Length: 514
Ligand code: PHE
Ligand code: NA
View 1 (cartoon, rainbow, N blue to C red):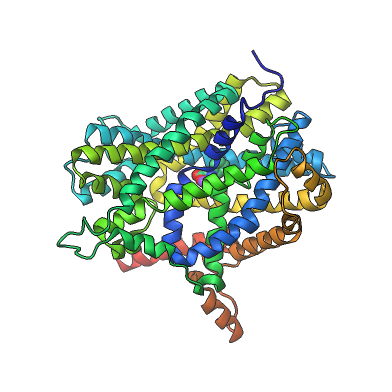
View 2: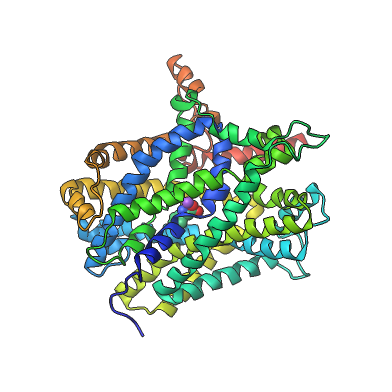
């Protein structure tokens, strides 16, 4: 039974689904690590500037593009972009958007599957008597597929398939199902986050041990919240800040456009887009920064955090630290933490599934079940190699191309389309029609000039990343006439496979040494 013009059930449902789309693993796993690696307080100013000059304009643009497309029955970027642009090649840019969603969802659901299994491990007390090293080892064995969970070979792969299956099932129930998951998941996530954040804030120095007598949770908060202006001139920090804003707001992928295409023609987009964007920022800045870093700093000291900040901390360190609060609160904290991550993850992975389903339905009349199954299959085909070859660094490579570079390119093209091809005057009218608030005219100007130029800078910066990501050194070298040395991780080096040669050389080097 297909409903012809599917729309969101209620405004609350829409906001929660959109906020669920944005609030994800990025808020809790990516943000704290980015902040620490980029100097804490030095990261915050570029981050906030990018939110206002890149994030908000892109949210306005994507919501407008989506609702515009929905009016003519299009729910995915290929035909929406084609209808807005003047050449049919825009359609192919839109296709790129659908594939980015599938590429990202493939590894995103893998992380989501870790969070689910860690909820159960917490409940079963797997980590309760393990040392810090053993908990950390456990995770490494899991992701390298060298451990044995319950004696089942390739256990992580099966859990991944189950989680993918849960996603497909919910997707097959349509917008109603997505709305329901968001209505349950979002409030729980916020509740769990608040419990952990309050614990993090109130820790102080109570857990300092003889070994690390000066450990204090407040050091973590102070490190993040003491703004530093020195970084304003470092392109590296700006690139990291822009990358985080993209990922966390879910822009540059076509998933917001898809959700927005199910709005009613005259439903507000100006206020709704801001509400979901600010909800994401609240969860990221307030909750995302109040859990991993302060708790780790409270037990292990700030030096440890600075030396060990990484994506794995959430799985390698937190289960051990929670146990230090005793069996009962330790278990509660663990379930809150991994449960929160699971809800954050699933409401985002569902959002990445809808563009494909919308496209197959609009263009080929595929029903929900067929759409969801084919989506799951595609994600599995793309995701399996990342899982099986995790130890070869395939994973990071994937995140870089699908989760960072693609988003910036797509966003740049779509911004040009909206402001210059479709035309900012029509675009502005689209944004403001049915709006509950008056969008400040300042943004009209920002969307025309500032956002596209900044996006271009972000792209150039990624292409030309200098050796060691040390921009100051690179500019000094250039000034002295020594030329510009590209880093092996710069986009240009990657495209020309310089980085591959680099790692092969490094490998030969170590073999020679042996
Ligand atoms: N914004 C999500 C997060 O923070 C990730 C995401 C990106 C979700 C793109 C949907 C689309 O984790
Ligand atoms: Na987010």
